[in-house]
Image (cartoon, rainbow, N blue to C red; front, top):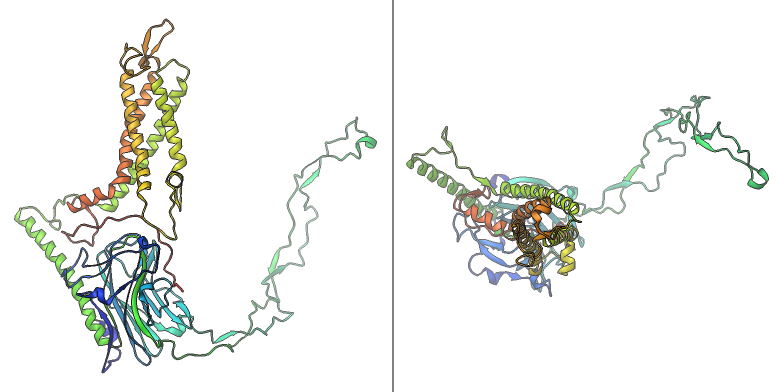
Length: 601
């Protein structure tokens, strides 16, 4: 229990400075920020929600980040106080409905501020505490402000915000003796001192700047062996005069100058000679200046103290959103923090009970139907595919199809070159030319870097800004759809022309022009007779790439929606943490974080 970890002392009288469960009227207590003036579209919306997993929808509702790839800033003020001579406990819940990819879930505690409508990245704070991640880089922030600067902990705290849909409880306990204790889910992850683990104070001792290395101090561990001498046959010259060369008879020293024999590589060349190394008998080790007391050091017994604490807020950037914050408490009473933690315990235990009940219900249904449950020996469980596996399989299939498409394109180019001088079907030759230009276009315009694709920059005038990421505009999405749509249509045209070319005897001036060619005798001959290899190549390429274009359109336009539709019907699994009957997931989108959540100014 929290009491076993936190209650090292009992306060006779405690005070709650701030408490929030996001019940009725929370909008009057919290202030939305407009610090990104002129860029309102980059600010995300907040809403109250219990999420997809909850025990009681009303009781478990919290404040949720409701959009993707947005900045979020909201704060609440309270009567300012000082923690001088008192313990300070800051505690709150954070639940990730889905993996953020990049984003923060931390809380800021700061001095009283007149205008919280400008609360944001540049707003000064006293403490920043909570989870932060950017892809594989993950940590739990704990930053203290002292002397006008923000100080990170020397060694990062472990990241504990794992598991989609699981609510985690963060507890910070700051004591008047300058010690700190951090708990996540009632488990202690750190206990230590502000003086030792944050560089708030200068070091007590430093290297003496007046101390100098003695002139006879030898700090080279190895030395050249004075007894070692270069062998007499050691050759260091890489080039030598060619002994077989002779001055030409027609060479005139007066007119041509002095003749120099050409040089060749020396077969006896061994490289520069270096004497061997031996231990230095006078070696004394690496010299270090003596350590003396730091004259600039001044101890401060009040590192923990903040004379003005007047607001609490969330200022984060999130790629995928969906985070729910709840049950915030700022107090000097360990008992009050423990009481608030009971809400988190009830939620966690309630979800476990719901999962157990649904598992038992599923087992009962299986027994009633006379079918074996997955735990029963010999039971056959219906195959369920995980969404991550489905995405992986789709990506692998797309890569394989790309390789096949390139091979067919090479085959098509070979047949086209082979029959380029034949009096053959003009529309098919035109079709091959357009296909080649389209392939070159895709190769050039799909070159991608951290700012997006080249085609999006040239044709749509848009590039991705990693510092200020935003959703892809509609014109760029339309451009991404246009290329595979055109490819699919052109493949259909190619298949139609192939079918027409396989009709012998059709007049060249009717239907598709040039579907037959004229022989030397002036008779019409089908292209299927003149260039059967080209027709086969066109048919194979167009047939395969029509399917390939469909898969590309599927990936661009609606793969995630299809997977979510399958997940809702139980055909694939979304997450092991999700109990059966979960609500529909929010559509996720790819994005990039503007950077790590390093302490702002």
